[in-house]
Image (cartoon, rainbow, N blue to C red):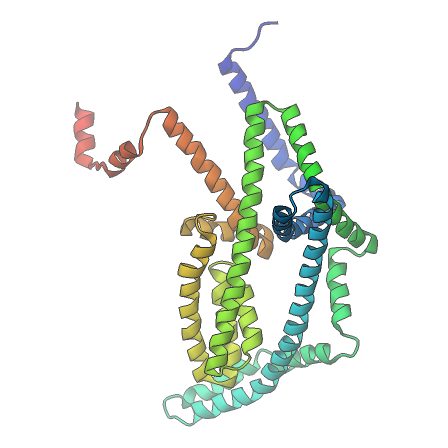
Length: 402
């Protein structure tokens, strides 16, 4: 049988891809349901892998420090086990401490907010009604605020908080049940994450063997590079964002404490956590925090906003670049595109992981373009010259005439 030439093979590939794409769109609901079922089956292992990845960051740090002091290979297993144990203890202690500090303060702020709100409405109404210019808007303001069914919302929230059956254990159970209703699934997630961390070196070795066994060395090298780049990019991003959050929370708390702004603890934590979502997070965090402070003192709310803008600029332009360096070097337009697309597809989680994913794609695409330009012997100087060339309609008319 005669072999097809290159042009025919390329045409056949295009036709096959077109047919596959057509049926993929035609049966998209069926494919979507099938993928959802597959993800549901593998959900414990996916979540376990995510947890293992997060725990591996402090674990690898402890391993490096301990192996530097105990280089003998006979201590390796003990060092890995100790690093894993210390990492889990550290993470659990941080979560317990965080919840014990944050939840009581959130409850206190909610109580203060609901108790202060009617008085704030009354004071605002009296202030508007006491001036001739704003008097026509006083009644409209009062009607507009009460049109939200504020008291029904307040009563529902207050009943939920003060309900004796509602405690931290039931809230935690609710969160766990939202992940899976089965205790076996939760147990599988935890055990799988621990096994991944214990045997991570073996899994990495076997995975590398499989890649190089099934693919050509060139393709295997590229996949190995992509996986390594993805791991390091996500690790650097998570580490730098957490350091930035802690720094921002500390600066916010110190400033609010010195200036006597109320609810310094919970607001500083809220501002720090909201900074995990770039661009939109700091705006939402500062806005909601200012509303809470505004109910206590409008002047202090204005002071807080000014102070927050200042420390946000310091954090984004000095502190975070010093921590992250060029490791997450995305232009601002790609950061905006990453969080917008990620948020549209996967919500909050998409916003959080959108930037490191975009950073990996951006780096690989830049490398691809650089290699193509190098193969064509096109230098940066030539690109600058081409970029600065200017054409007018007269030039085009002359060229067509010739």
